[in-house]
Length: 301
Image 1 (tube, rainbow, N blue to C red):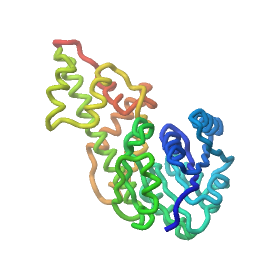
Image 2: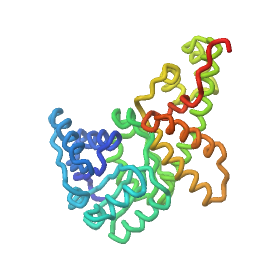
Image 3: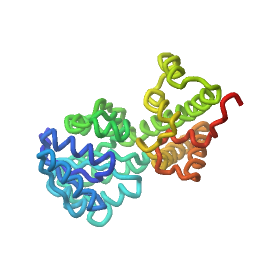
């Protein structure tokens, strides 16, 4: 198993930028690429301010050429296809024997397609979507769910540990993406219930911090409650994971469920609730903005 020293990171947004930064801090030789070049430059300058030297590239192919490992974190199926297989895409530029790890949340079908393309080029691939949001990326505490061969995941693990608190190998190609779909379905349902609980408590004139104290230590407790109860009550939504991205993820989950002949009525309903929030201007707000579709009743009504 060859030691990984040189890496390319393609996609330096709110998730990828911090993740790539952790790799530089861990001592890897990092080259970054972003389709908006100014963001790549800002990323490099920020790390330079910490005394770290990183490189930027003009194309995915230039970033990937000669690297031991390429990591991607972009937006959706189409974005991933473009940066890996499009003109100047990374995958054809990668050396045989190198490793591709995709942290984008995409469809399971796309993950399996990328795996097949990688194998055809003599490259090992891992689909490795993450959970933990922007804070998890910045703090190096992401949860990573991996699909791919045992060997590929084992080789990628030491690198991913630079920005992760938990790494779980769940199965073959596409399994990481399917696990992420399950993750997003759980979050959507939890936030729907949490939104209604916050509004009930407000309308009843209860002290919100006391309600949280009372219920957060029991069966109702969740990450969403611990991290979003207070901000939802205050109407603060300018952080975390945007509704636009959640709807993209839920779309993949609903499509996968249909392929498997499964009904997902709760997920489908919450997806439509999110569409309502998009329509009132919440597209780029955190997923906890789901509560905005529920008017805040006057106390005592």
